[in-house]
Amino acid sequence: MITVKGIQFSYGNQPKINIPDIELNGGDELLVLGKSGSGKTTFLNILGGLLAPHQGEILIDGVSLYKLKGHELDKFRGSHIGIIFQKPHLLGPLTVAENIALPYFFAKKPSDNKVLYYLKELGIHGKQHARIQTLSEGEAQRVSIARALVNEPKIILADEPTSSLDDENAGLVVNLLKNQARKLQAALIIVTHDQRIKNHIDRSITFNPSGL
Amino acid sequence: MSIFKLSWKYLMAKPLSTGLNILLLALGLSIITVLLLIEDQFENKMSRDAAGIDLVIGAKGSPLQLVLSSVYHIDFPTGNIPLDEASAVSRNRLIKSAIPMGLGDNYEGFRIVGSNHEYLELYNVNFSSGKAWAKPFEVVLGSKVAKEKGFKVGDTFIGSHGIASASHEHDEHPYVIVGVLAPANNVIDELILTSIESIWYSHDDAYDHEKLEQEVAIKGFPKTDEPREITTVLVAYRNPIAAVQLPRMVNARSSLQAASPSFEIARLYELLGIGISLIQGLALVIIFIAGLGIFIALFNSLKERKYDLAVMRAIGAAKSQLFLMILLEGVMLTFIGAVLGLFLGHLFIYLLVVINEQGVISGLTAFAFVEKEWWIIAYSLLVGLLASIIPAWNAYRTDIAGQLTR
Image (cartoon, rainbow over the protein chains, first blue to last red):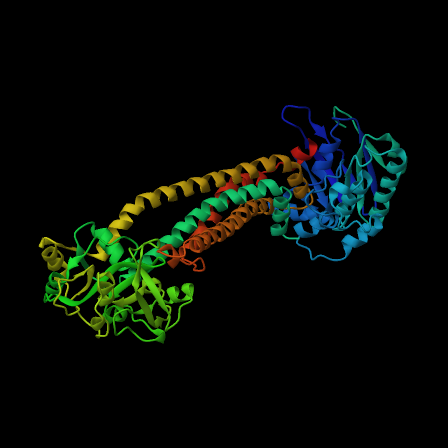
């Protein structure tokens, strides 16, 4: 269960961003829509434990995210939250398999066969030893999704996952995320300004530049 | 995956920059290694070769030259001294033992030393074959001479006047090898040893067959009615008072000079010390530049890797893990640099020894490890830590959300 309660944030003297109270259960989906500068990414960063809000609380399975200190928060983020960035942002010096396994290592979990499982699940099996530079944009995006899923998180956050994709691929990626979230019984939150995927997700909220 | 592997992967992602930084550091450290090896081995060799010799008495001239030529056999002798005068001095009650020596000849660069059996006892020699000389023109070879020239007992050769290999030959007086010494790891390995009488007779205008059949002096000074000369006398003191009185007494004599090996070598180190300090200073500057290079490389690479670091934090990396990762990169660079520097230092000594088959340098070995070399590794790791601590701190403070939003 994910609970977002009374969150407020502002950058310096800029207007306050008020985040609506949200409750999500495992397997729930939420689309966060809004134009650039509306605070969507800020919301995602706060939810992902990357940016502490000025006010309010986020509870994930009963754990208040920002009451965790330093290393505890890092560890919690690594093991409970899977983040998919707008661009894949894979680490160049590492292979595909090493990129996917990285959250394992940071969470100090023993390595198992999940890397190969997700390579297969996302249709990129056989690429585990490939260098990042040799991947197509679509393959790289799938690797970044596998990296977000490998620790079997409770919440999957995707920031503009379809912005650089055509209609067909955008639909494929959203369905992929939905399927995996369902399998993991994780809450899926997609932050986007891409109206194309509105029909794929039942529940949505829209952010406006002046706050919600 | 481990932090170590992660750091290594990032280092290997920029092979040219990594390689150049390692090479620069290795060059500085190799200079220090060479200096350490030479200093340590020279000190050991110098003290080994001069063991049991408190004073050298010879002709007036440079005392350092007298010691270098008589004890270490690496310089030209200062000249000769009258046998009777040297013999008279050696009877002084302050002298425990006096070993006369006649120098000045060589065989293809290997010095021929005329002395008695006490000289062999001074270095506790062992024979690998044959025995000590008993008659004129019988010689005993040091292990290195025998090995390099392929000589064995029974072989003969003709010595040359002078101590350089291009000197003219004494073609009338062949030397006969009667013994070969076992390796002693000191100066005697490179010498050809014979009696003083052999040296005398080889320089005589006409030689007397009768003399060549007589036994030579095994101990003390050779007995002769002729006005003969020797080159030096190696003296061991009877008591500590001798160290104060004897040199002053000998130096007061018009034709003789006394020089203390320990004093002269200390003076030599003092003179060389300035040069060594300069080279050490240069090496330290190179190491400093290498450290600075590593700092700049890590600092610049962080600018390019800020997003990578933010992504790592976002997927669960702790600040301390990123700090350690960057720190390890610096330490790994310097550790590899240190190992390569030590290797290059030893390789340089090896090549130096191969090029210089004779003389003091040939006594060095590239295969000895000096304890101080551990310090080279320790100092390098310290350089690595210092060079990477600021970049590591910057990595530690990575603003995840700020970077990911950019």
